[in-house]
Length: 192
Image 1 (tube, helix red, strand yellow):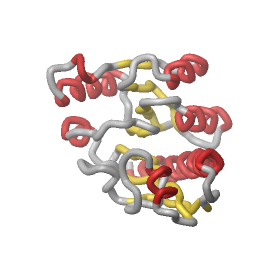
Image 2 (spheres, helix red, strand yellow):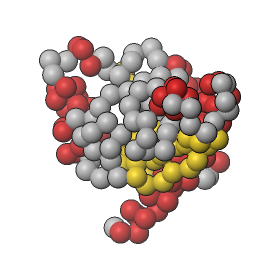
Image 3 (spheres, helix red, strand yellow):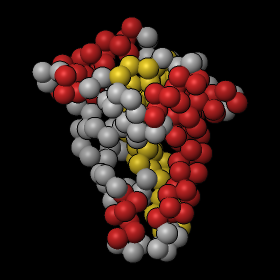
């Protein structure tokens, strides 16, 4: 069973989808800890409901990004975490984490990368008037949503209805992320 940490900054709907997939037996993993950079974010409430430990760290309380990430790495190592799963984590990952978890950090992004990287990808897509957007699962590198793409799925945009478009995207995110993680974890375990 793959030990993972889920990083989230907001409501945690992708965390919940991952945890539910684990409980259904669709994802052979265990969330050892949820890390949030936003103390009090709703993901904390969701994690508490599932009995998953949470570490809440305010980056501004650390002297540097490296110090913040060193604290995270220490937490992850103490729990023997093998993979980092970003799920609405709104910070760029720095060298400290990238080095400690090389090729073992994945992210989900609500667009068909390389289109619409960064914040508010759904808003960007709607502003550009695209008919199709989507979801991308990718490895994390030092850039903003620039890591190698692992999986993608297209989602039709509902014209002039952001809420309906977001609902469609979240539904696809929740399915695609858990299936992709399961594939990655199985492949990695077969290598060792």
